[in-house]
Length: 114
Image (cartoon, rainbow, N blue to C red; front, top):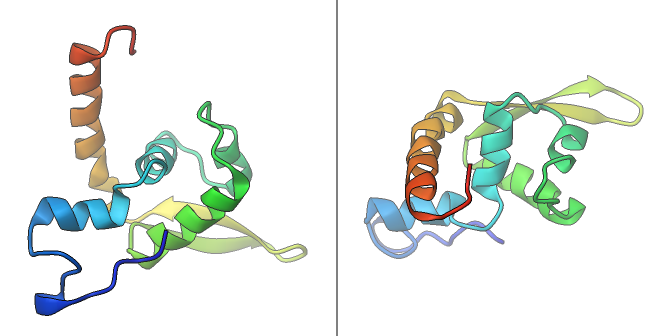
């Protein structure tokens, strides 16, 4: 998924904070990547072990997108081949409160979730 094109007033659709947040993390995978990073996963390999089984091409794209949005940072931990460790920025960590709200809602209204 490409980053949104900025239009009038600097926003792709409108200045609505929900619409703009969805432009950043409103796809099927981004919040799951953030969830896993909040739980301590730091490498591409770690993130691939999630139960939702994100396809490798989508994981790579989401990591790039989250980095462009300033939610994660990456640094090299191995040179040959080049491998990265990923970390949530303060902006990314702040999504923890959003995810807590999702958890509370899911536990309340979706039977069988835990």
